[in-house]
Image (cartoon, rainbow, N blue to C red; front, side, top):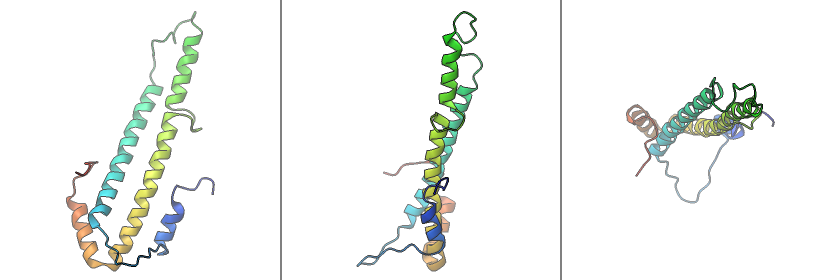
Length: 147
């Protein structure tokens, strides 16, 4: 469906308890991985917003020094206009800001899906819930990477 958030169908199915996994062996759920995914998704979204701010500051730069203030060099203002549009266009999608927003939306979808799945596990498994809460309160924030 046009305009629907990435992964929205899976998120809705998770909210309604309609996601299922079938394995012949017992399924082991690693609580730490849920916490790391939450933390890392948020860190990536924060980083993307920082990059969007940089793109916006580039677009809003007043003087570029490319002949953009020259009366005799007609290509200067045209070139600067194109650079501004590539940094932060009108949202049509062919600019840095819009492309980064698409990545942010995908990561947000992954994060929301994992939150819903973790919520389901917390509702049905008190051990998972306790460990998840403990780790969420103690894990360092920001993308750390794992060794």
